[in-house]
Structure formats: C-alpha cells, structure tokens
Amino acid sequence: MALEPHSFMSTMATRISFTTEDKALLQSRADWGANIAPDMADHFYAFLGRDAEMSAILNGSEGRIHRLRETFVQWFEEMFTGMDNWGNDYADRRWRIGLIHVRIGIGPQHVVPAMAAVVQEASKRLQAEGQPEALRDALSKICMIDLAFIEQAYIEVSSAAVLRETGWTEGLFKRLITTGAGAM
Ligand code: HEM
Image 1 (cartoon, protein in one colour):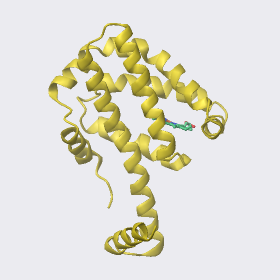
Image 2 (cartoon, rainbow, N blue to C red; image 1 turned 45 degrees about the horizontal axis):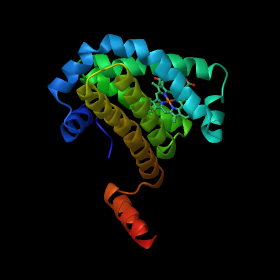
Image 3 (tube, protein in one colour; image 1 turned 60 degrees about the vertical axis):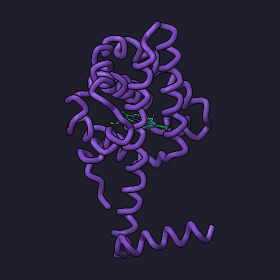
Image 4 (spheres, protein in one colour; image 1 turned 120 degrees about the vertical axis):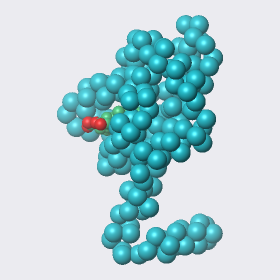
C-alpha cells in the first residue's frame, strides 16, 4: 500500500493532463509567481487564522507561523519553477509536505478548503494583472497534484499504521473498509 512518490507524480500529471505546455507557461511566469508569493502567504494564513481549529494548530508552537510563512512562499514559487521540471525532487518534496501534515493531524477537512483558497486568490491576482487564462489552468492543475499528495499521504500513513499494529493483510483491510462503508 506504500506510495511511491515518483510514479505517483507521473500518474497524477497524466490523470490531470498537466502538459509540457502547462510547465513551460508556469516557468515563463516564475518571476510573477515569486512576486506574488508573499501576498499569497499573507492571504493563506489570514484564511487559516479565521478558523478556530486551524488557528489553534497554527499557533501551537513557538515560531510556527513565522516558519510557515517562509515555507509557504517557497512552496508557491516551486509550483512555477517545477524544481527539477516536476521530476523526482519535486515529488519527494510534495510527499514530505504531505507526511508533515499527517504528523500534525491536519486532515482533508483542513487541506481541501485551504487549497481552494490558494486557487481562488491566485485566480483573482491573475485576472487583475492581465495574466493569461492558460496560466490559471496550469496553476490549478499543479495545485491539485500537490493537494493529491497531501491527501494521499493521509490515507497511506493511516492504512500503514493499522496494518502494522494489527498484522492484517492489505486484502483484509480493504474488505473491512468496503464492508464498513456499506454498513454506514
Ligand atoms: C494548501 C494547503 C497547504 C499547503 C500547500 C501547505 C504547505 C506547507 C509547507 C510547505 C509546510 C512546510 C513543510 C516542511 O517543513 O517541509 C507546511 C507545514 C505546516 N503546515 Fe501546511 N500547508 C497547507 C495546509 C495547511 C493547513 C490547512 C494547516 C492547518 C492549520 C497547515 C499547518 C501547517 C503546520 C502546523 C506545519 C508545520 C509547521 C512547523 O511547525 O514547522 N497547513 N505546510
């Protein structure tokens, strides 16, 4: 059941049609992405801060907000540069981000609205600054790939933990889930 980040990256890129044109467009606008990244970080943390539960997580330890602001800016810029052309380094980095969120207990109910807020705000900036619509599409696609990494990490880590603790086989575990869902 363990996820292999490199093949997951290419599967997701194919599934969402993240094309070479999308990549080239993002890279050609990397400076623009870097310019708006600090504003996007402000918007992002203001959004999270409005929710009592997320705000408590954000302020859960000393200096966390400060660190997060920096890592968010870097994350946002990487969506435009693609690091190693959205290759293995990119995939490893996204997988690690997913694992960190699982460790802190941040689930889909937190991450999905947060990513929607990023896409929405970035779209507004794109439109206001006359950037092409194709850039919005490309950025939305890579945001969804990044989102899939964080969400999948949640499933993979939970499943692996159950299998390890119980000694169940993967087949049995899947059957239990299917049966459980049927009974709900
Ligand atoms: C669009 C969704 C999100 C993105 C792209 C994102 C991005 C990141 C990144 C890049 C890191 C740093 C990982 C590292 O150290 O390698 C991080 C860590 C973290 N994120 Fe998120 N995040 C998202 C959603 C959330 C949400 C919804 C919360 C909940 C409040 C959250 C809270 C945190 C916390 C607490 C850390 C660890 C900070 C620390 O103590 O170093 N994130 N995030």
